[in-house]
Length: 470
Ligand SMILES: *Cc1c(COP(=O)(O)O)cnc(C)c1O
Ligand code: SF4
Image (tube, rainbow, N blue to C red; front, side, top):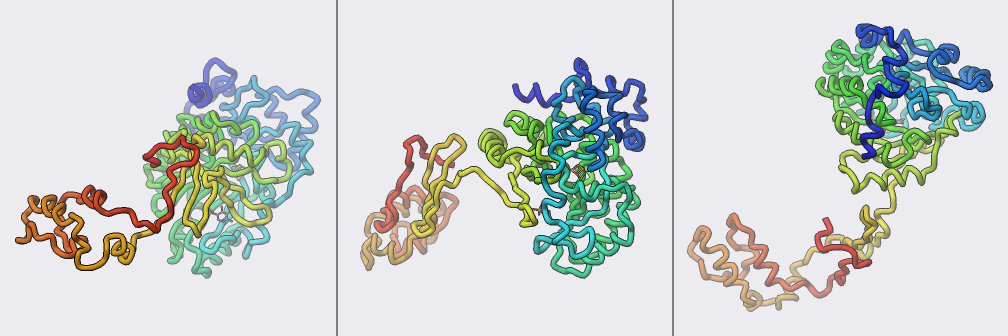
C-alpha cells in the first residue's frame, strides 16, 4: 500500500506534471533534450514563475545561489508538487532557507579528492581504479552535491582530459575508471566518444564506468545516437542516481531500458537525504521502482558534509534503520550497500546493522541474528580427520564391522551390479565403494556416529529459531 501512494508518477489531480507547468510545450519540444536543457530554470526569478516562495525568503535564497548554482530541467520541475513546500523533489534542487543558515557549515571538498589527485581531474584513492572528472556541469544541480566546488559553466579543456587519459595509460594497475563530473553526459555525444575511444585504447583498462544523473534529470538525452555510440566501448557500466520513487517515471524507465538494451548494466547510487528518502516506505518504493526498470541498487550513501547541505543530512542510525527495514523484508537484489564515504578521503566504508552479533574465531563460532531478530549459532567447518574417524569407529581390521558393509551392499548393488562383489563388504567401503546415481547419504548418516571431540552443538539461544536456518 505504501507503494501505490509514493511511487506513482505524474498525477493529474495535483499541481504538478507537464500539463501544469508547461501547458504550451509540444511533444516535440518536451521529448527533445536540447529544448529541455535550454529551458532549465537557473534563477530565482524564473523559479518564481512556477513555485511559490515567500517574499521574505527571496533575497536570502537568491544570495545562496551565488555559492552554488541552480539548474532544474522542465522535466524534473514537472515532478514537483507545487502545493508542497517540503516536496522531496523540490528539496533536492531548490535552495531552501535552511541552505542559507547552513551556508558556513561543512567543507568544500569533503572526500579530500584534491589531495589524492595525481593530475587535475583524477582521484586515485584505490589500488586498481580511478575517478576521472570530465565535466563541470550537470543537467540539474543537487543542493547536496559533493562536488559543488567544481561546477562552472566552462567545459573541461581537452588538454586536461588528455592528461587524465595519459595518467591512466601510464599507470598499469588501473583496470577500472569511473568517468564522472559533473555529469559526463553533459558532453556532446561526439566529445564523449572521443574520450571513451581514448580510454578504450588503453590495453590494461578493463572496464569503463560512467556516473550520471541524466536518466533521472534529463532522460530525453538517452537517445539512439548516444546508445549506439556507448555500445562500441564495452565493457561499459553506468551508475545512475535515483533518490526518490517519484523519479521513477515512464520517461526514466524508457531511458534505462534503452541503455540496458545497449548492453550497459545499470546500478543505482542513492544519497540518503533528510525529508527526501529517509523513511522505510519511501526507500522500499524506490528500490522496487529501480528493480522494475532493471536497475540494481548499488550504494546508499550517507550524505557527505559538504558546505551548505547540513539540513539535508541525517544520522548514520537512520541509514541503518533503512537497511534493517529492507533486508529480509524484500528481494535481496533490491538492497543497496549502505556506505559512509570517509571524510578526508578514506574511501567508501560499508556500514551494516549488527547481524553478526559475535564471532569467536578460535572456537570457530558465530552468533548471528536474522531480520526478525531471532538469534542463531553457526559453526565454522571442522572436518573429521581420518584419525578421528578411526578412533570413533575402532581403528583396525574389524573397524568396518559395524554393519556398514551390508547397508551399502544392498543400497548400491541393485543399481548396476557393479563388478562382482555384490555382498563383499570390502575393507574400506568409504574409499572404494561404487558410485551410482543415488545418494548414500542416508546410510552414512545413520551409521557414522558424530566424533566425540567436536564442539557441543547449540541449536539456538533464544529458543525461537527453527531447524532449517537457511
Ligand atoms: C567511489 C569511488 C570509486 C569507485 O568505488 P567502487 O566502490 O569501486 O564503486 C573509485 N574512486 C573514487 C575516488 C571513488 O570515490
Ligand atoms: S547530478 Fe551529481 S554531480 Fe551533478 S549536481 Fe547532482 S549530485 Fe552533483
